[in-house]
Image (cartoon, rainbow, N blue to C red; front, side, top):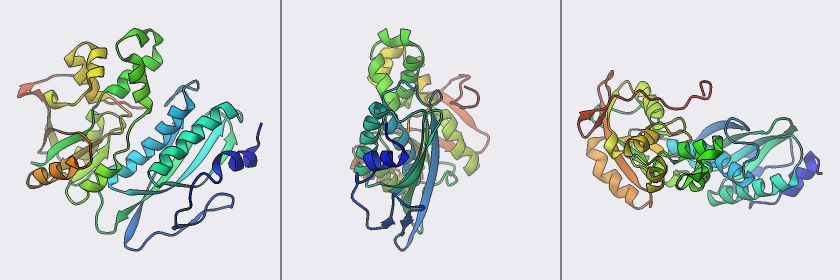
Length: 322
């Protein structure tokens, strides 16, 4: 079995072409990087722990994708362009059968987004990983949670709810006989970071957040930071045909779309005068976007179905209450 330095040499070194802004990466005490002029650096750190974010028996390629894609999603929510990543990996043992597919997928996704691994750490212990991603934002702007105004329209990208259904299947093998169960399990791990969407939104959106704890929970981050409320038409929530077949019921599928965590889609708000501009700009990204409601005055939070009030006692995902 390889030791730490053998691991770095075998699995991490020479996997990427050096970015011009990386002056020193793997193999020394620190990385040395240089940011371009007139940009700020966006940073995000996430930890994934076996038993909380994935099963230790999960496909290591899927785990790698989930780990990196979830971090990239944070950059997307700020409108940032990916640049660098560090990886701290804790392993019970140096298992080559696990490491090879994990690293192959990690670098495949990193290379796609021109993201370079510049450092990190390896240690022995319960399986977990911590990633820190860094990206560039123009000096004069950024997408934040605090800019929503009354009258802004609320949008989401993609389709919601698949990740929650996939987690159901992961936690209860008896559900594997339900329609599309295995596909939904895969979708729990495999998301698409909306980097291009975030960049396209920079000049137009008033606020944004990525959906990691469920739409109903993450939208509240925007509302709290912006000092506003919201009205959501649940009939407009986008979900997949596979989720509907799995749930067997439109109401349940809609509730999954509201509460599903680890979706890594974007929720964002757009001033009324920018709505058509944003819809045209995003049409060129190849990403589905759906208007689901509108920002209201602070203190208002309502769910309705085409104007008919909906009284659902539901919440998003909380790691410390799960």
